[in-house]
Length: 136
Image (cartoon, rainbow, N blue to C red; front, side):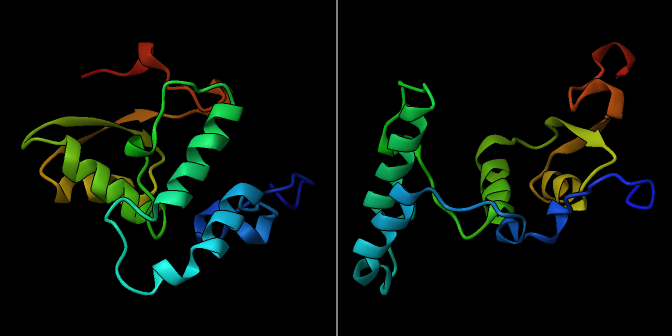
């Protein structure tokens, strides 16, 4: 597609900073101001002021019913996907996963006792599952 002139953003490399995505300033300041608290192990949900900055950011986006207790900060999306699956899945639970699939998604479901059920993710669907074509 690049040869055809399309701009492709390859977020699969796990480094969004290379594509201009930046940490919001409120979060950066919270991390800088609390760097000393980050040297020992922090709370399992993350440093409180950083979680508070996430809440402020989400409130600016219109999400009002959120508190710091609802926020978990991880070392990357892979860790957080795994933690989410560990918390949510019971043995045999089925999880809808788009196809094509990023291998981490189906692997995390399987490793945490679930069953990945793939649905077609066609470009024309604008990243929405085509439910009428999904057959169980």
